[in-house]
Length: 217
Image 1 (tube, rainbow, N blue to C red):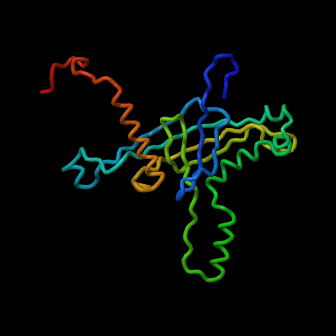
Image 2: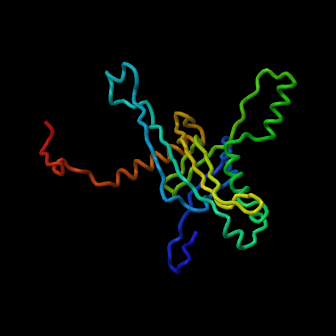
């Protein structure tokens, strides 16, 4: 997305990528219409619990539980001005449906499982969703699970189609403890963590003198 001024840098978009969890094939790319102004992140360290927490307080049992939260705005005003037929007839319904169906099981599979249940099948395997990747620059391409999803529809056309909305997304990073090392998502997570380590190594080492200390004793 360009700012429209000659020589201005190209602004990359953040968004989501849905991939086949087995083959890794890209199924859908969902870019945000406007990048949010803020991205909230949290890290919950995974320390050893129980009695081991007292005998080995410095040990970590795995990567931290990391979460992202953002608010994305979607607006059909430009499409309406350009007489986009989908926007005129349906407003933002297609864009919202695209995001919402990430957390829906496939309707065909629902029907198939119901038919299996009616036929007396004793065990029906839970439905597998695509693996969702959160992309926020080349430094953050990370597998996630949507944990929180809310929509505020702020304006409507005469047919009550939403034409402006705000979508709040909460995401939990899926790490190798969740996915395993041989999984495509597990591999992408390790690339993500290793890149953090590479970036951290670029920061100059601090010195005790900056704290006014000559040593630790």
